Image (cartoon, rainbow over all chains, first blue to last red; front, side):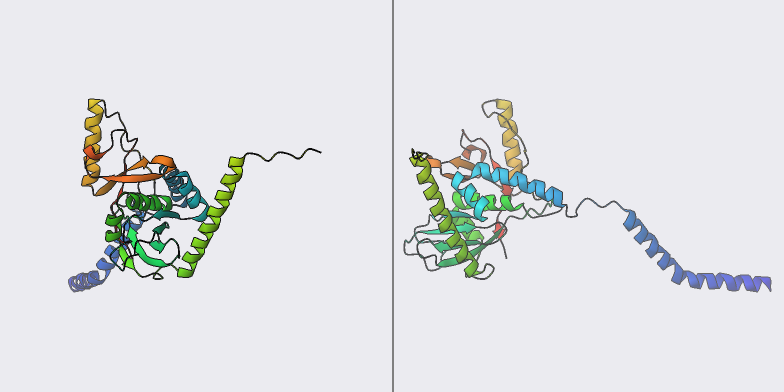
Amino acid sequence: MLLALAATAIVALALLSDLVVPRMEERWRRLRARRKKVPELFYDPGRERRAEQRARALLRSCVSEEEWAMYRDLGFIRVWGTQADGPGDRGGTGGAPYAYLIYPHRPIVAYLAQTHRLLGEYCVEFPDETRPYGSARLPDSDDALAKWMALTADERRLITTANMHLPGRQLDPDQVKRDLWRLSQWERRRMRGAGEGAAGPRPRSAR
Amino acid sequence: MKPGHGELLIAEGDIDVADDEERLVEVFRRQLDEGLWAAVPLKAPRGRRDAVMVRSFEEIPRDAERVIFFPRAAGGR
């Protein structure tokens, strides 16, 4: 009798183990996964802010005083195009001067300087797949600087690397035109300021 | 340039000192082997600035103050 009960218990345990053991293993695995120290890959706003400060300092040290002031005040940098027939292979500008607006982490926009007609959006990224600090994305100002260096050093190479799209795919054309208007106003103010600076301080009127 | 960090000093030295130059060449090659692009910011006349991309250590202007490495460009979305 006792032997029969023991045999039944063993069989029951063996059958139950099929159900229980996988669940226990799963729980154990989850517990270990929760306790496991994961490398710091989470978003740290303080670290990102410090990175951006360093990037701004680097950008400032590389671009001209005017370009730095433009970026600081307007949030983008204008770079003049140097190709005789405009950027890329589409159409051409017929020799008309053109330029690019560099926005951080947004497409580069090409436009005709005189008419402000938008020529195209050039989507380019500088991904660092090693993700040294958990992200593949450069700080904003580093992204702007990378575009600026690549564009001023080898415009054709960057433009052929980029994915070209018609204006309006990512950036609102009205917003870009407003930015161009802001840029013209900003330049006018700077020229006025430079003129006043060159004339020296105004003499006080004698009474 | 590094995501999440910004500027990182990789190496510095005087190219007129043989040991320094050797070390700088080695670091330069390693960065390019890792797939980075290298650029030298330049001061042009009348306050203008631009940059030159360099593909070998010999292409770096002798009076360059620094070389900036950054991830290679790729077509974005």
